[in-house]
Length: 346
Image (cartoon, rainbow, N blue to C red; front, side, top):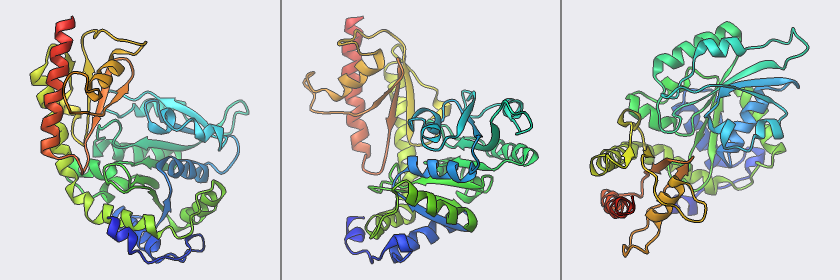
């Protein structure tokens, strides 16, 4: 990947003259079954651009899941920067939401008291959970009835495609636009791609420039994205295997301490809950204390395992290309040490 970056043929992408960026965009458009694509610096920017392009008129609102990344982890940018009102739909445990709730929350511009619903956003996968294809089919049907476009936050949509055993374009076909991250499991250092119609991408280029996302010799970065789509994407199933193995093993090692819904561990993300109150320090939650202990080496272990605390008792472990089976084994050994110390303190 670094060799490809160093050897990339370059031009000025603001003027559409970078051949490596153009190759990446053509590749993404083909892979995800859309007319055109746009390389952007980040997934957060990609989602913001997409919402702004769909919600061009002031007083617009978007319907989206209450656990979605756009709603929870992007600083409310669609409201803060785009002036778009977010209206949430409750995500169910499997990541879907009730389409009847979506229909009930839909608003037209007929009543002057309300923002006008202009877009549906859906995330797939969401927190590692893959949405069933039949849900995407039904969502598309409802969107068509309401005459609304769908934007797919598909940051990890290739992971979803692998889990379902289908080409990525069989998922993205149910959305008008999609944002795909190259720097998560696909391991590029920077960047995402937005895919959609030629008309949409033309508008998106203007908004990208407005937000400061126009880059000059961006082929240095796009070259890595090409490797991501052509090479790394074919290895993602190994990350899924590692996540599943890790989740199954911690559950077998400590069923008294952790809870894992193995049905939801189908991609490269393992989410699990801590069942007992681990003694904490410095105001940390139980999840934060666990994460701290997994990364700390004061227990005599030389292994540092980075995880992420999600709320008070939930922990997220993410697996990617550079994490080998040996690394997973070391992480499990570290987990055993932390679990043993935890039991002694209960």
